[in-house]
Image (cartoon, rainbow, N blue to C red):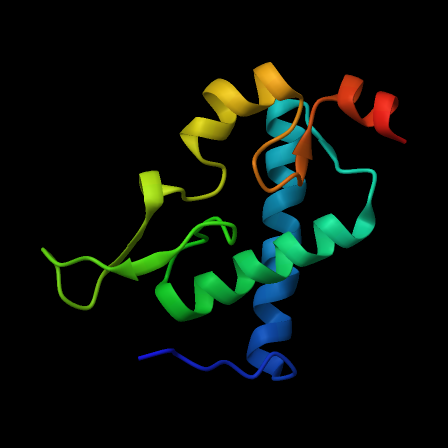
Length: 114
């Protein structure tokens, strides 16, 4: 069953602010920059906040989230893509200059795509 969330609720807006602070910390910790297209960043941050409220973790919004068949009431995503996910940190960002979702980028990627 698809879970519903009121994205205009105070609860969502509070989580959205927490998620923005979280992504700011990820950028600072790893030396990343946000994607030069603000719509990309906004969409990913909203998706991360939504997943945190619905599933309890900031699952990457670009991948499906499903109930874990081995742990009823718990959720997982493809490759356990919890932000910032290992595939992004280990492969995507070093090789492509950005993560799959596009929010976290190398300074070089931002410079070339601004």
